[in-house]
Image 1: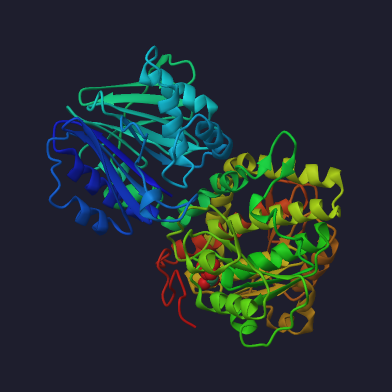
Image 2: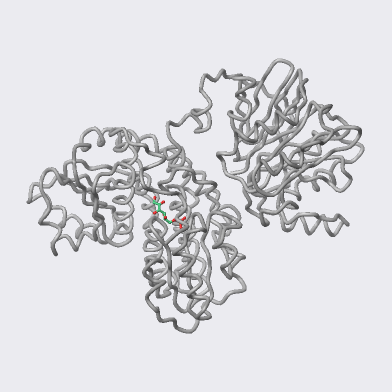
Length: 607
Ligand code: F6R
């Protein structure tokens, strides 16, 4: 998501900041800005769009005396991607400037409180609240370190934040909670940044900040504190040997692998501000003014379409709303029938998929409201929809979609819970079990991912000679079977077919032979005995079977791949990364270009 870089040293700081921002471009952004103190003024220069726009603004500026500065690339979450929402944000007194990555969940009550005290806000962002809060708390009897710590104690949500102060222009204050931030330790110069590539050209000595830590850095010194108690902490300096490419990918070999491993954080991000862990309830303020739809028509393409098919199960069983799911390129040319109180739900990671946009426009021509479920703020889907729910997965760089689907599944779960509650169709015990399960998912998945990868590697070396694969599932696992097949074909170029397991004997079973293995989703649900019968039929024809299953059920297949048991359909959140990792390891084993598969584009903006 957003990128932060701060520099305190002996060289002109702004060119170093701009260079660092360029090295963070891979994180995705829609605006950028810098701040530095010079001639008794805290300058903030920002621009909408790419870094070249910022460079144009900086051209000719008198800024070369500043040897300390902060920079930021913003990937919009709250407020449109326009200049006034770009970072840094200054307090109205012009003494403090702040950059922030993350989401301040309680920004609305904080903003109201500060406004009631007479403070004026200049942006729509959650981030501006933090700098205004620090300014409010920074009274003459306390230090800025103390004010920063007090402000962080009042903030709920996630942050990596860095702060500059006009009165001490060679010093940077920074802190983190659930958003990345690290220090680069140089000679007579120190850095703070979201990621190592930002300062790799200057130093390879890195200090990894942990949640709840606050740091102060100057050209010749740095000190980390406990953000709550302000006790000084001892930190280890690590020497990094990565090259620039490896550093961008956080040490992962490919963006796809990095994005698969980001999924625990993605789930946590999707839940932030939407799930109340104490009341065990879901709030979606974006939907409060809308009536509960009588029927939903989901329109999407590719992986997003598979997410829609999965969501259909939850929306129908929990919220009792009839749901149709259609591929956007079919929907747009089909003269679909709409009923009163229908809602079209357009799902799109990029928000720029031409067919999905055409489907939305068709619905709007018929007077049907459109809700967008989208990852990219300011994209066409978000601008054209009547309402938007953001998936907040962060930029997805690998062409093959992974973490975006995970975020779509979380949001579809929340929608089913939310509408189920409003309609009174969902038993409270079920609701609380699902919410408890959701809240525990990031931890379960985090622990499980390395094991899943290990198994995927073993299986890849055994199955890489297969020419074709079946993927089978039933119920909510059927869309996962479609997704598993799509992932395998798009990055490994192995032919794969996703099928509803019950459809096998209506034709496809004729293809079964030892070189045409089956990847089955045999998860613990009411349909498991039926899936097992389908697998017996495959095995009776000498078909090899990999089955993704959960402990407690003995399966006699070639490879039973066990994932942990979680509540009900939440097991999809463990099955999905297993499918992704299997496709990934197959592609790596076969030496394919994982992040840039042939013939594919990340954003399909043409029909
Ligand atoms: C598959 C993949 C595509 C996209 C599809 C829709 O890995 O990435 O199938 O899911 O092109 O894209 P969005 O979600 O951006 O509308």
